[in-house]
Image (cartoon, rainbow, N blue to C red):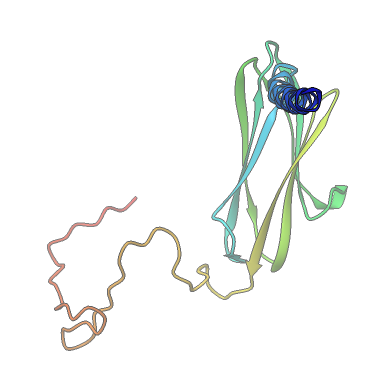
Length: 181
């Protein structure tokens, strides 16, 4: 009888410790946000791979979860965090409970190969980093010559009016309007 009680007590203690640990981990994530840890993000448009004939759109965001305005220094580097590899440098004030973003375009010419785009965000207490990798392909045209993106259908019309992929006949497209900027 005593052994059975000891076994139940050990099991109960084990579950209580496990529950306490999970509760502490869960609550600590909210404490970090309440403590003012900004959340950062970095986006490259278009995504990798790209050619060395485009301007890469680099976008970053900083969220301020605190109840006061915060000042940040935002820097973006190519491959290494050095003065020579600095692509962008800006001071940014983010209002309480809001987010702010950065955006700039970078010419990829002469930079073929694999690279890391590094966004470093600093305030008076901490530093955060976001890293995105990108493959820049040397090319004589802007296109990577690959089919990618949000394609829903691909149809190749061959001379003679039939399509070798689907067997569809050539359509008259003279009445279709195109929208141009």
